[in-house]
Length: 313
Image (tube, rainbow, N blue to C red; front, top):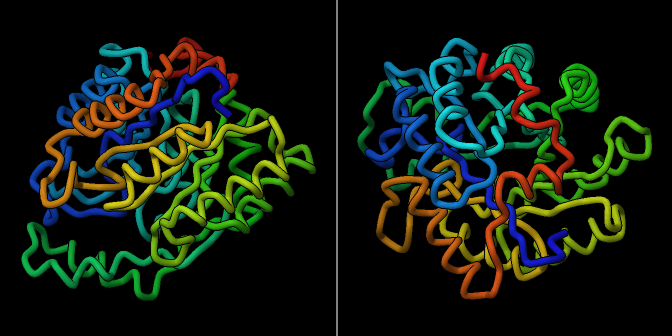
């Protein structure tokens, strides 16, 4: 946990499976837009950049390493932030495809989803009537019958294969049971501390984005992991700032960005990830806390360093 008021800010520099271009004109889609968004978020105070990729032609989520190769070196050249690649991919992607970019670039950090769950974004259709691309409506609609697959075998394979590259993990926990899955793999020696737990709250199918639920998840994590973990929180949609602030007050860390919320405040779309980072930095400083630097984040998470990746090559 954060013991000296240093709060690690994770910024989601592009959107993953949660949003589609029809919701906002400000989504970074092209490699150039993604690189600019990421470097801007780092300049605003983000120590870690959580990155997905999109097809530059139509904005569809992609895990193609060739697309990542068009923006990762630009980000590495433009800032010192920790690059954290998603292994979530997009709906229905097989695991080999989800892992392709991580295997190629061996980043310091990647996401590791700690269990399968119903992942429903279909309620978005209540307010969406017009779409930019033909794929958007069916992509959202199909989540009524979609399971985000992350089995025990999947997790073991990712840790063994990706861990051998020296990459460490952002352990995404969508419900309390996922914390016990982390504990299982920790006891088995598959995962090693310090653990970086990301409580994902507010996805339909996972734990609700409520303050009492965050308190419960922290209490369980304290009991299971003691001092061997760092807690960060994703609050989906309108819950982002409130839960991020609560996490910091509890001694934890924060994640903000357009993957989790497209708004800066009620009724106002965020135009950049940097705006959301600037907002949480202001809040943290008003609470007598400071954003951690990339070097401090690397120390806290025992990361291998940017020079040990294949990103700049």
